[in-house]
Length: 179
Image (cartoon, rainbow, N blue to C red; front, side, top):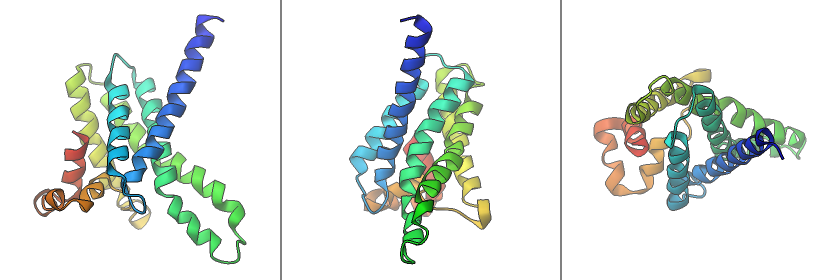
C-alpha cells in the first residue's frame, strides 16, 4: 500500500472519528444532558485541532467534521416536526439531518480556517475561541434567529456556572467553555 493511500485512509478515519466526536459532543444538550461525554468529546476535538502543525484546509475540514456531527445530532429534534402529520414527511428526515449538519458545520469550520492564519499555537487557539463565539453570535441572528444549541447553554444545568451568565451572558459562557 502506498503512502498516499495510507495517508488518505488516515484522513478518512480522522474525519469520521471527529464527526462521531461531534455527535457525542452534542449530548451536553437536552434531552440527553450528558455533560461528561460532551466535554470529553470537545476536549478531544480541540486536542486534534491544535496538536501539531496544520494548514487552513486541514483545520477547516477537521472542524467541519466535528461541527457536522455536533449539529446533525444536536438538531435532530427538528425531525419531530416532520413526523407529526401521519409520517407524510418522514422521507425528509435524512434531508434535514444532513442539511442541518452540513450547513451549520460551517459555523465550526470557518473559525478554524480563520485561526489557521496564526502560526503560534496559543494565538491560534485564542483566535479560534474568539472567532467561534463570534460565529455563534452570527448564527443566533441567521434566518431571523436560530439561537439553539449555543455552547454556553450546556452550562445551564449547573447552578454554579449559570450564575456567571448574569455577568458575561451565554456567549461569555461559550468562550469560557472553549478556553
